[in-house]
Image 1 (cartoon, one colour):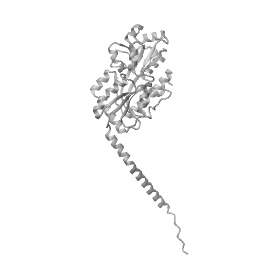
Image 2 (cartoon, helix red, strand yellow):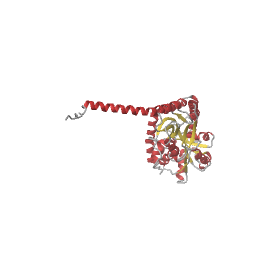
Image 3 (cartoon, helix red, strand yellow):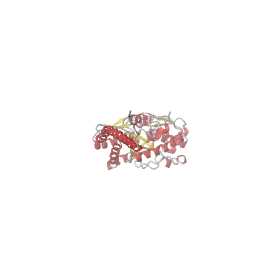
Length: 352
């Protein structure tokens, strides 16, 4: 009785060809399935912004971060045809507002006005942060760099006989534990500038963190606080009005907005040789924000910062305009973290 011939296995070349055909078919199917998502993303990027954009300022209204963010709003609103709105979310040295943006969708509708504190200092100072300053954000551009300024209320300085940095050091050493220092919050540049001053001069001052520069300055002017190392933009008006006494700026060079005020290093004597503590502010988006949107924002910020009107405004505030690329800003953030981590370690400052 004849039997059915046994099926012979396909030659190796044929099997390989069959596998390639199946793989190609699977890839084609996957690409076809992904096309609607890719098209939707491209359409979303092209249509951005189709609604108002929120800029989270992680400090109270009236401080330097708030002032600089609001300076950008009219230009961005004009450029993109949608309102850019400042949303102040103060607390925990900028960590509250930073966490909000870190957890927001990466769609270009929520941005952060970050600072040297939120992205350069906090990860060295805080035992635990609710956000990762690197992994959770897409840097856009540096907006401005500013000096801090060592200020006292004019009345307080007069009552203590303080007319210079050396006078302040003398008084602080004579009153151990009785002097206090305000800051715009734990981990801010105003905090670390003071900590660096304390560690280099061997003085002790009680640190009083506030929810931003504005409330801290209010207590400083009222005589409830002895000194503050504030960002220059938020103190400038009170210095010019004569209500605040500017003892020195904390930058390596004098600030063009206050050319008669020396640097801490210039007048601090041997103990303060090499002292420098400046601040910076920049825009960041949540991680995953399309690079096309990041670049569009960066281009408009850089364009506005280069206009004569904006340059004049920032210079009057004691700020140096930024406008660098996202990659350059990312490298700047990394360098600042390494620098301030050393300052935090040397000062012994720590927030649990």
